Length: 108
Image 1 (spheres, rainbow, N blue to C red):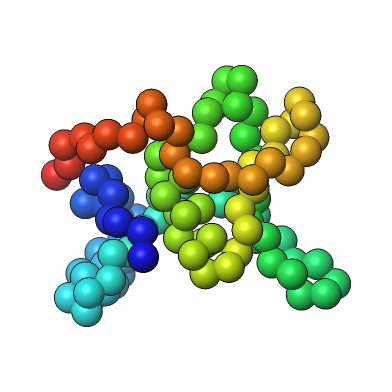
Image 2: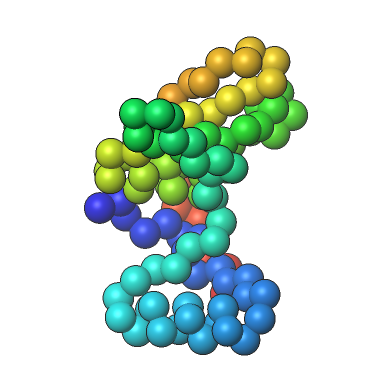
């Protein structure tokens, strides 16, 4: 399983129910994550599932959270892609670029 990232500590609850669920999940050994999820889960007629992040990378590069969630989905056999409106092509999201791989301090 992918290593828990530094930002998993950050919490942005919309309401008390979300906060209660997150505490419940953590109590049972899970890391609830709201950040980094792809924009679309797509299913074709044969039942193949892919995850797609839509982003103009010229102005908005993929975030660390998106690489991390993509790595989890790939571990479960769900291919993850990036679609840029300029190229109009699905490009596989692989791992975080080497220059971005560093551990930052958690934000509490």
